[in-house]
Length: 380
Ligand SMILES: Cc1ncc(COP(=O)(O)O)c(C=O)c1O
Image 1 (cartoon, rainbow, N blue to C red):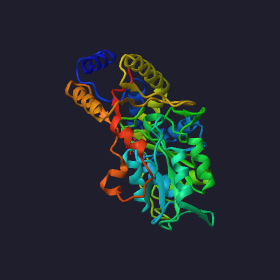
Image 2: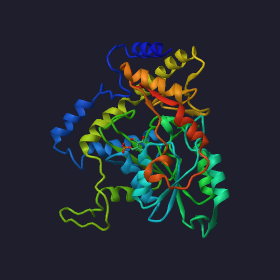
Image 3: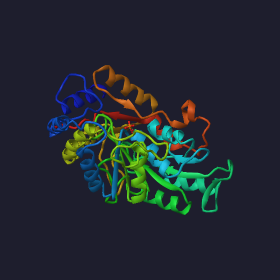
Image 4: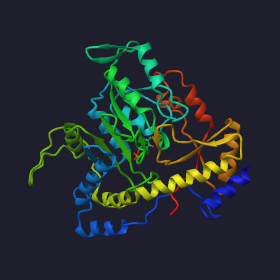
């Protein structure tokens, strides 16, 4: 079976050379726009490509505003700051995520609380979230208070794992009921829709990443989306050193960040956005081929988009019978020039988050032992 899998992936990518997990594709106007950007000399913190990207991105996802930043982690950090997460607060998230989600919570001086994920989406389980809140929290002065710690639970950060949308409308309702601000970690889910609405646009704020391994990339980059004009303005201010507009004077009114996306990166991103539909179609055809291929094996299945969603299938993932089978697949494929990866180690098991409060995490633990990512690069 192992050799069959390696052979199949080699035919998918039409090579016997090393096959990476995900490589970027630059097949459109990338060089043209980069050259235009260099020729203009506006390669840094101002320039037309940043504005153009923000407009086009907001229009694509259907949010009123988009603010481009240096990376997805910065987008999350600033989104949490705008959700007024502060020192001593608590933020609910999922243990099955990339470490940046929890790092951003920690940057604000807040502590993560982990609730379980659903098996189908691998994203936050509304049931687990609601159970946690009902058992452990109460509303006081329009704030959600954790009865055990007496701290305010200020925000909730679900994540759309590998581009598969989680049950975000249910999570949104629960957050509303409990006076918790919803911030979506949509880093992996550009092009993914939940009931025809783009991921990242359900929360008060949403954060996306354009790291080199994402569906489109600017080398490094991120964006914050929101429908709230005041928050959008604050996002811009907070990510641009809080400089007050003036022709020549340097006046800054708060301690802020230098998180603005350089125009050079934005020029690459504008070109990548033009390719997005092609990339999404290519991912779906890859999913179809993987799905058909794996039907011949009983103990390994390609994870499909949850019901009612349209996933971008950013990273293809299979579910194996147990950890032993998972390790055998990881070992064989990596030994034979096909890059595969396990899902992340749970955040709740990492040294720095081990003492965070958590619910029963059976589903996250189950997935941690069984999920493997397969080569997922766009084929064009
Ligand atoms: C779920 C998730 N959150 C946050 C990030 C952080 O994005 P970046 O690497 O652009 O900082 C990533 C990806 O890198 C991610 O996968």
